[in-house]
Length: 296
Image (cartoon, rainbow, N blue to C red):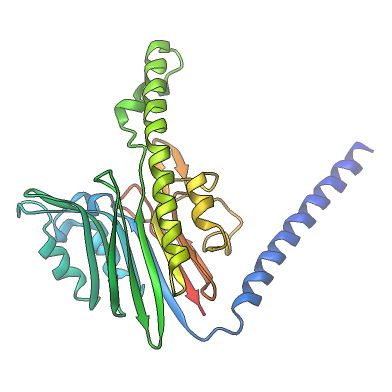
């Protein structure tokens, strides 16, 4: 009797899993069967553009040159004036071999280095506009991509991070070190309380950009927020999440100290349908590239 109940339970679970997969596949197929155009978009937090390694040793630049994306959106780009490190001109010299159009926007610009975001595209980029925040390390920006007779609005984001360091988390590995664990927990809570309202405010700014757009929108980048957060839910409301519309799995995009999180996204509004999405495995950053094919 117990075996029979167990078999029935397993059979029901299998049926539910098959049904969910069928619904997902059917909804994706149905939604783009009449589309005629496609755009391949890549977004990636590049961890200071491969930790500002020179082009011949830069794993991020190497990876980007091997891809076939129509538009690449980069966050945490770090380039230096000192030629001992990666310079802006070197990045331009590499990526201009493949992409004709670009939008470079920096939240930090001083005598030593520039830090911010980049967009590189096969298609013209017009109406470029920075969206600056009170924290210097974070930025959003928008531009319009002209694809034939269509204009699409791209919003590239690097939202507020908790800025946890290895020192903050060092003592949380050992439950036996009570005082260290307590100190680490307090520091983590402090940074959590500081960053969350800042990120939520930034999300509201970006949401207004979405709602005010006269064109279909593509919202990409490092939100530094999980799918359970206010920032993600506020930004994704009414939009297509490229990963969720193509997968049932978790899809982590960032790994740190054994913790995997999905905090990098590609969102679109109608009529842009994400018909394919992948989180790529590569080196050069603690984040993974997210690549989606959009159809309309």
